[in-house]
Length: 575
Image (cartoon, rainbow, N blue to C red):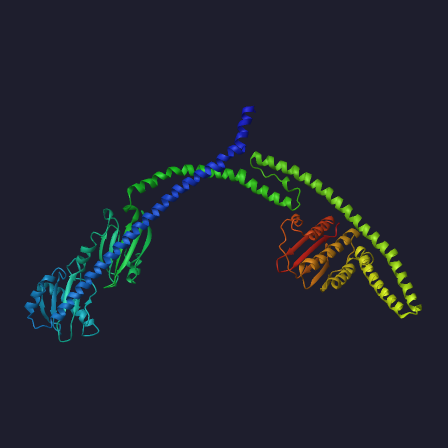
């Protein structure tokens, strides 16, 4: 491979070249996402705009229809009240001729026995409506029509329109006034111009019996009107907007009730068709960005594979290294050349740290052994020399006290004897602390039980001792380390925990020994990294950790503020 080829390969794998894929392309994707997002927001805004406009339209149209129906009811009521005057039928019908636009099928006056007294239109037309009017009167619950009522819409044979009538009777002795009008004409006059863009969509007026009263537009009418969105809701008196996905795009459906008659008015429009054509063309034009997005996604995948994933793996290895795993960096993480070079550097650093740790461990082992030997020497000298001298001195004082004649002298000798006894007792306790005799003679269990009793008296809180399994003797350095760990843990409890009780539990099984020291004190939040113990002042816990590490034991500390602390030491027997 030539030098130029080497430089070219290096430039593709180097960090500078990767910046294009990791930084520039994501920014490009962000810009594209903003473009698409803005377009999507614009579409949503346009859809909401169409829905809002249609909702206003359907509300105003429903209100206009309701007002016109209320107007017809008011007119018939006024005519019914006027019919109490002593006017001839001809004069009466002449007086209502100006209402022919409101009641295009005529106004009829009917006697209490349903006989026709007068009709403002051709008599042939009344014959077409007579059956519907009489049927309505027969179905009425009361003979009095106290308030004007609007009948259900109905068809007339041979007629294209749908009709309805307003009926009113002031009292039983007055004639019944019936005003007949074309619902189809009324709806056409109010709803014909309700659609906007090229008459796209549909307008439907449905009565309470789910009959189509009026329909215009290009939308196909469903066979079952209740299946159509918005109709059921409007018949329940609700006003609202919904959206329907159909072939060709999404439709906006708005609905509103006609409160006077409990009819439903529904408008259905494909909102995309009535928005600006420029918006639709820009939507198609934006598709050219798809290849760019695909290319950017490939670049992101490459960046993730070559940079992000290796860095995450490297981060995991660094966490393992901080916990003492010096071989953590040996597993290759891959990635670009700079990351691999960095990993190689950290491997060398980890090897040096491991060597330094091994030297420090050996040094600590030597220091610990020397410390224990020095403690033994001091304990032996205190026991063999100082304590024996004190015993001999105590015996001489006892003899002197017996032969002394002066009572004051005897009192002084007794006081000296008492002080000497306390000194001997404290010296024995100090000797046992320096050199646990029970550990050498009786083993770890007896030594820990005795330590618990002594420390309980010393710190003033009860310390429970618990043994599970059958005791098994371990090497001297392991037993003395476990003893010192327990001693240090109880010392920490007396100084910092504020506990009311403590517990020492030791358990033996076929594979290991488990030692736990618990308290119910204040507790604390232990750091994740044991190396931080020194920085927060927990030197006792750090010493426990170091002693556990010297005997290859597993050390764990569990603590939480307000819930006490538990130290667990697990020692395998194969050591």
